[in-house]
Length: 252
Image (cartoon, rainbow, N blue to C red; front, top):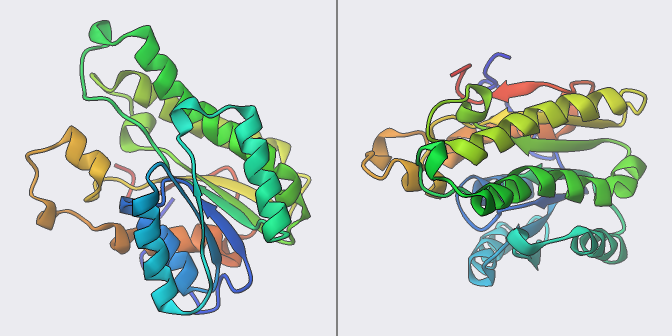
């Protein structure tokens, strides 16, 4: 899939749409939430820490185009009932859901697989693979009811091309790409519903800082630099495109 950096999103691209963004408190999630709000969407901000979400909420309020909502939840302990509650709250408060950006991720420090514990793998698979599946499933009735709904899963360069020391994280992200293919096939009969995976590549984010602490942040792409791709996949211009793995910075 070619880069979409030349795409120019119309200012009203997401007008009247409701979009849920997980991991919205920082990094790519924050940038996406602000970009979506700036193009007319009502953003539902998910994250673990309320204070971070409140800062993003204030940034969106300053835009003055659409209001945001905050929904804090620790995904490490989240179960089916928690996702059902989220879907019910969205339906009761907003009456619709037009898209989900699954951006939340969890990663331990890099280490050989033989040094990683079963409990660590359970957490990595739960947060990075099971949660996106379960949350999408809980919200599916709302997404089916939307005239044009988009689900974006987040993969990674290491999920697409597995390599040493990434362990359960890279397995979970490889699973995300498989899940996208499965869901796209199953949803083929619903032209109003699509799902794709995005691979951000090297970007200045808290996750990148955790795995590559010695890098110079100023030399990397910033989250805002990738938002044209995030907007394209969430908006109606990508209608009919489903089951794709989209690279923000080329096939790395």
